[in-house]
Image (cartoon, rainbow, N blue to C red):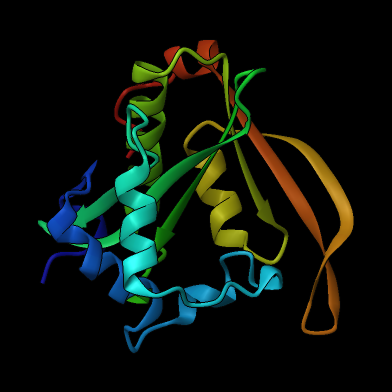
Length: 185
């Protein structure tokens, strides 16, 4: 079996046929451990597939706000973005790898790097933001490996399982992205 870093990682726009698989990974797959790391303090609830599909199909953004992460040709996660404030061009991005077997092997770093490339290539923005929490050390390391810089730490603003955590704000400027080595892995 190939080591995780040797796996072929790519991102691509989702098509309508992919949506049921992504919905299943997000809400129904036996491995739901990603929920412990993906902003668990917000308590995301399952939405019906029809509502999930409608939300995706109504998105006319270019690039689409949600792409699939493929590992050896199979969707195992998603990358996304949203506008914190579109008028001021403040964009935030995120990454989810639903299958925990692919954590800590370089897959997330490769996918996030590809996503930053996609966003800076197709959207006229000076900066990409990424927000996580201090309980998610893997995400913080991934962001830093991809060239994101810790810009802010809001202390003890995330409460989860009886403990306070910090909100970690990362960012990458277009000029920083342009100066990155193209093959970071």
